[in-house]
Length: 266
Image 1 (tube, rainbow, N blue to C red):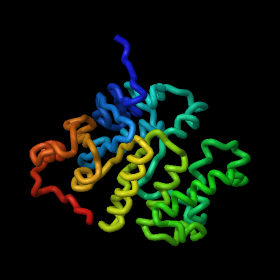
Image 2 (cartoon, rainbow, N blue to C red):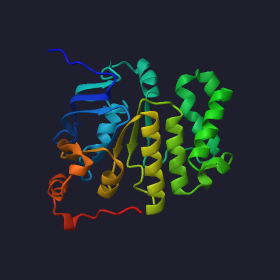
Image 3 (tube, one colour):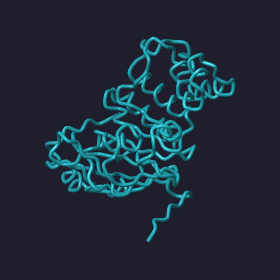
C-alpha cells in the first residue's frame, strides 16, 4: 500500500533510512523510521558513534543515504540530483556544533548568508540583499539579544553569542525544519540554557519542526517534546521526553546511570 504523507502534521518523514561506509563493519545508521511534526522539537540522544550526526547529514543531503526514504513536506529528497539540492536546503536550516561562521565578517554579514539559497550567484557575491531581508535579520538579532553586535566581527564574540548567530542565520532561511548538531556541546551551562531556550521558543512560535542532537540528557528532557534514543545506528527509544526512564537511558547508552558523564545545564 502506498505511504500517505500528511502535510498538516509531519514536516519530516524518515522511512527505513540506512547509511553505510565502506570502512565500517556495520551501518552508521540502520533501518531508522520516524517522523517530526510541525512545531515539534525532537531530541536525539546516544553515545558517541551512535549515528546521530550521520542522521542529520543525511536529512540535509550532506551525505547520501545508502537506502531508505526521506521526505520533507511530502517531497522526496533522497536520490534527488545535485542540481536540486540547493532548493531542498532552503527548507532545512542547519545549526552546527562549532558555529560554522566566518570570523572576519560581521554578525550581520554572517546572518545574511542564510538568504543565499534564494539569490543568484552574482547577487550573493555582491551582497545584494533586499531591505526586507535586512530588516528581518535585525529583528531576529534583537530578539535573540544580539542587536548591539550587528557590526561586530563574529570572531570577537563569545561561544554562546556565536552560536546564537548561527541559529539566527539558519532562521533567515525561513526553514520548515531546523537541524541542530550538538548545538550546546561547546558552551558553558548559562550560554547553553540561552541557546536552547531560543531554539525551543522560536520553533514553537513559527511552527518549525526541529531535530536536535544532544549529548546532555538533562537538556533533552527539559527542552524537547520527544526523544529518540540511538545506539549502534538504530533507534532503541522513541517516545515522550517525560516518559524516558533511567532504565531506558541505561539501555540507550549501554552503561549504568552512575557511570554516565552527563553535564547539567543551568
